Amino acid sequence: MTYAEVIGDPIAHSKSPLIHRFWLEALGMTGDYRATRVHADGLADYFTARRDDPDWRGCNITIPHKIAALDHVADPGGVRESIGAINTVFRGEGGVLTGTNTDAGGFYAPLGEVDLADKPVVVIGAGGAARAILFALSRLSVGPVTLLNRSPLKGAALLARFGLKGQVLPLATPLPPAALLVNASPLGMAGQPPLTINLAPLPDDAIIYDIVYAPLETELLAAAEARGLATIDGLEMLIGQAAFAFEILFDAAPPRDRDDDLRALLTA
Image (cartoon, rainbow, N blue to C red; front, top):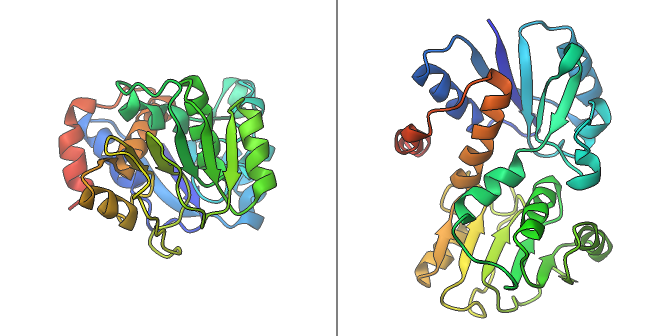
């Protein structure tokens, strides 16, 4: 049976198998989607083994391999130069393993009707997901970006990479006013340190977007809702990026008209 999978470390929390299996069943397709734990020192061996597996359609990639995986696959689309991280690998022409990134599109989808042009944004984190998010924000022509990160040099390099004007501040720094706050880090995820932020400096029309989906209602989102701020939870980006990946991996469009049923499954 053909299959795809999601790899990462840790991986037990991943909801990707539920999503892709739901779509496979809804479409009446034969196939499977699995979760496989891959340690950092086993990444090369993983891709070597999958190259020789005729049933393997490809994989999605989560923490902490989104950047390192670039060293093990082809990159004809120039993702290394544009985003600098991948989250999907598939068999390209001639059976070559090819990397791409669907995170940027998944992040953008729930913001499609929001006008962020020239408006200030705060982003927390500077990892693989943050790269895709900063790439998407650069296409939205946002105003100054404040990046909260442990490494100022790394953060400054990312802002420069995507042509974004702004500043890099330590995580504990009070928030500046912003139209959008994005948690692009694993902080607040089950098994990770909490993310506790005072949202008081944000205006009443600010949007809080947390890409963490385990738990679905993070401390950040709960604080935002207590203030009456608009929120976007991690399932929005997760389902959005998965939809792009599903079409790549299984050569079929997922039934997005069943999103309500899918969310009910994921939150049961």
